Amino acid sequence: MPAKTVYVLDTNVLLYDPGILNAYPDGEVVIPIDVIEEIDKFKKTLSETGNSARTVAKMLDEYRLKGNLSEGVMLPNQSQLRIALSSHSPNDDKYALDWSKTSNRILGVALKLKESGRNAVLVTLDTHLRVKGNILGVEVMHGPGEQDLGFQTYKGIRYQSVSEKTLLAFRKDERLRPEEEFSPHEGVLLLNKEHPDDYEIAIFDPSEQLFIRVNHQKGVWDILPRNVEQHLALELLLDPRISIVTLVGKAGTGKTLLALAAGLQMMLVENQYKRLLVSRPIFPMGRDLGYLPGDLQEKLAPWMQPIFDNLELLLGTVEPGKTSSTSSYHELIGQGLLIIEPLTYIRGRSIPHQYMIVDEAQNLTPHEIKTIITRVGEGTKIVLTGDPAQIDNPYVDKVSNGLSYIVGKFKDHDLAGHVTLKRGERSQLAELAANIL
Picture 1 (cartoon, rainbow, N blue to C red):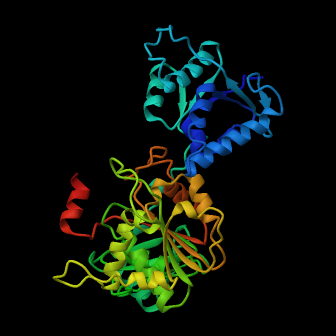
Picture 2: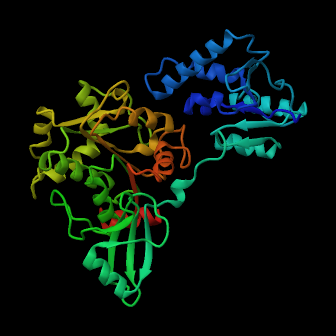
Picture 3: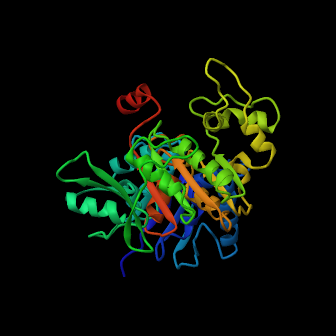
């Protein structure tokens, strides 16, 4: 029998997803005692990280009843869980590491297992720790198994050259059968081979297995799409049959503006939804300003200001030549038609018949995204927007963030639609800055 692989878990992977304890069937899971100490620091935090810390503590307490954790207990998936009580001695300078650092002591547990002849793998989201582990000959892993990189290749739209005859026939019938496999609601730009400037935008309908023509002139709330990707995004946002839409793109591509415009249209004009719920995770960019004065709404205002800015633009409350105006979105809030709140209050709720927008979703973990989506009730549409290249959460990265995770997991399901927006439309300066800086 080959020796079991030993997976040494870092603090960040447990806070990222407590379920990782059961992710390695028929293996051995080792948690360094230093990880337990670090998790204890987060248990009183009123955030998803704090909730994960409390979840891990409860799971370990349940497993404690099965035996001595330092000797090892059997998990339901037939793997073994053990708490490692020590690593290398602080006097051991063989590896030239500073053993006063918690991360190095966690690495030391994997080193000690490797020296004893065990097949040890260090599982961590810490880039620097993975680099140090690699240098010292310890096998390292980003997370449980291989990451789903579907979001990197799936853009939600393809480009195909077709004959002029095919394009004319498509314009007449507004339907076309694809010659290859497409994901549900995936878009395609059909380019005329003879005249490259001549094109049509289509979307794959999974129920009929056909391309359906997208209306070029379609706009909402006085917002007209300016590029192919925005046309496709609006098509996804305005289709009530699509329950979840993900919009990915750099700053200024119109993700939030399009989502809000479609939400207002579907709620106030089409009467498809009872209210518009807009939320975003609260993460500071740069140095945090600390506690803010005022009541709850006043404290939230700086975090939600990007949402308010877009609503003012859509509702036409900012008049040319004036520095201030009466924000009519306050009327919608007062009538209960518009709710803007942080994601902290989503847990435990059921949200039926609403148009829900989660902005800056790249700052969420897959566990947090799952918590949010499972709150969605009957008749609710949820839109997730963000840019995986702009992450403020230290516990996720471009691969492990919740938005990227959702794109990869939902791309083959009929209820979902996705598009990656490429071209910035905020201003020429904003587009130039996004590209060269």
